Length: 470
Image (cartoon, rainbow, N blue to C red; front, side):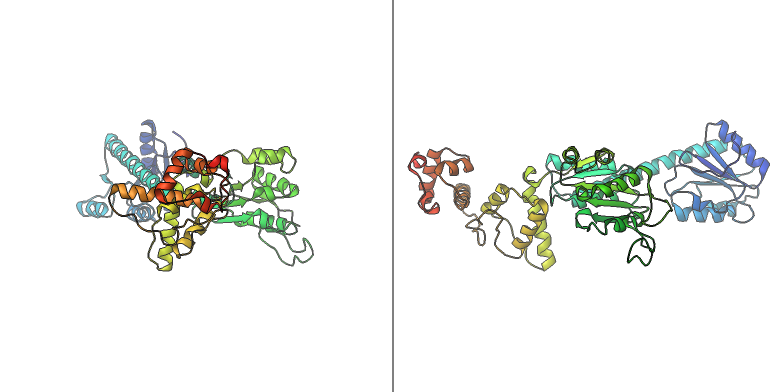
């Protein structure tokens, strides 16, 4: 058996507390010979504070002890974790004491002297129960995390489902993460999700936009400084890296950092220490770093604009956020989600998208990604014109009529609204218009006549002879 120790970690299965050294040694040997990793203690002082809430073991304690007795220890442990199994033993047991212990939440009550098999049987049953409780907690947490992600990262496209799966897999690890995505794609949303679903969720989340920091203050902002480090440095300043200790540091637009700052960042990532400007003390850091970029850092490294060693240090766990134009019908789902939220926020009745408006949203390239879409949804909720950069609003955007009549009538109305919406876009020829709608030119001519629409009217008479033919 290993010598008595106070080291308690996730491998410890049983903590045995008894002030009688002979009984403590005998019971410890019994548990050890049964293949259980046991820690033996002479008293319970400070024990509850050293046990994590999800510690996967059980506690066996004598009741009659100096200082903190077994019933007091039970109360303290249940304050940390209501479902932690605690077995109480005593040489002075009687019915009232047993009833008191069980009512206080003890898992089992053993009266001395008891057979070794009775102790082992109770401990093994308690360990099995503990595993079941922790498995259920893990499942509930995983379900809660998935629900949180679905709320934060709306969309059912395969690329978004894959992104949520990757976030779920990485959130609970200590790995630094590199987020890749275009402007407005939601890089900070992903970074916050990684933080909130991790064990660091109660620690600080410090977000820094490297592109917004002036070159003259960037080192002081990130690393901090001591008094007199430079002109105007009258008192100590704690930098962002140090302020994020115990939590998560999010570095957005990391490609904007100068090469000199990149050298210091690389050192911090490798050694997890920071040195304030003008100081000599190395300050240890316990932080997770999440970096984000809209550029191809490998290409930037090849061009000498970004350090290759820093790129390879960051590119351990990359996460790519898909551009909005790649997400198909997620565009409509997201737009309605943002519009409904804006309507509720402003106390307005929600609006539903009309067919021509849906077509406009799906046709747009969304260079500003989710941020651009959210702004468009806000305008829509306020009753303003649904105008997107580079595109004209559909003719029915402000007061699109609801479809009516039987199914055939509604299909005709929907078809006309789509063609009318496309006619508002700049097209140099009938060929261009037909390609945009995905129909042959002969079919397009027929549908224009059928619905009383004219390409020449919308094109300002620019219909050339060649492309106006069927």
